[in-house]
Length: 93
Ligand SMILES: [Zn+2]
Image (cartoon, rainbow, N blue to C red; front, side, top):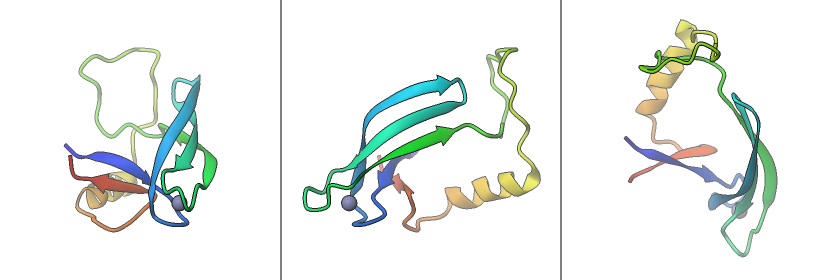
């Protein structure tokens, strides 16, 4: 399984997460900073869990996300094989 790094939209450097807050079980706010010293861009970001692609082996009854529609599943499958630069870029572990 590969991990993901966050890519700075300005210089395409690696962004690091300075701090993050969980405001909801499905939502996390994060403060990001570019690690390129010349760039130094920082921003606020949020990560939201929006759809279930496959069920948990240890399901918590209080966790209810909508099942991903076919279009979302297709996008998830496509992204597994994509190598293009993006905000979330695959990083070889
Ligand atoms: Zn940058």
